[in-house]
Image 1 (cartoon, chains in turn brown, blue):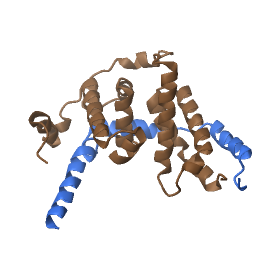
Image 2 (cartoon, chains in turn purple, cyan):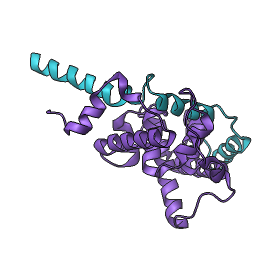
Image 3 (cartoon, one colour):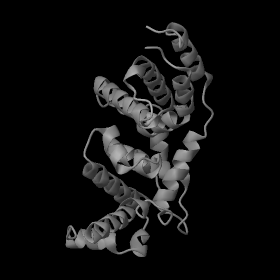
Image 4 (cartoon, helix red, strand yellow):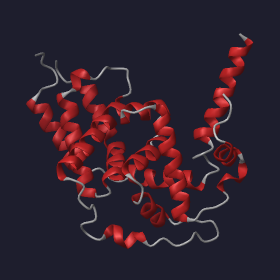
Length: 182
Length: 66
């Protein structure tokens, strides 16, 4: 089957989002762009398996994510910090007057395990639903929910943010009381 | 019927608590997360990707059937 012009245009339009997701995963600009390139090649080859009308962005994110983890497995879990960028960002200062510096936030995000980082990015930034994120990551919706909540808790801890739960006691009482009755 | 409606309203509220509020406008983490990501999305895209797609298209032209 031929690749349609529309598919190509949609691919081009998805590149900024793909790069953002790749950078969030790989934490390294060169690796991120390699991931995007590989994703575009794979998407082009597999275009026949994409069902028009379904979510192209989710389909592409799935390809990119699979590529990321398969590259990581191939390399073994090498330390991602080859050029000292991460080390420079590791020192996190307490937020001043509740204002959080973006560099500090980036540094904190880098300290999250990959599965939590991708979950909180997909839900909190890329605009996917829990269901879509679960499909992209090939896991249960509940798994995504718990990863997002652990990621958020870890970020709060690293960045020493307190009082975020003041607007609603539910998060705390849920932890204390266990699962609320269905 | 009424029960079902009640349930779905509760679900919606639960969802709002779960995701919306958790990383919503009230959450500093949520705001920073979107700022971090939006910065990345708005970066200039290197030419290599448009070139790559042009190459792919030449290898597998758009208009011909297999």
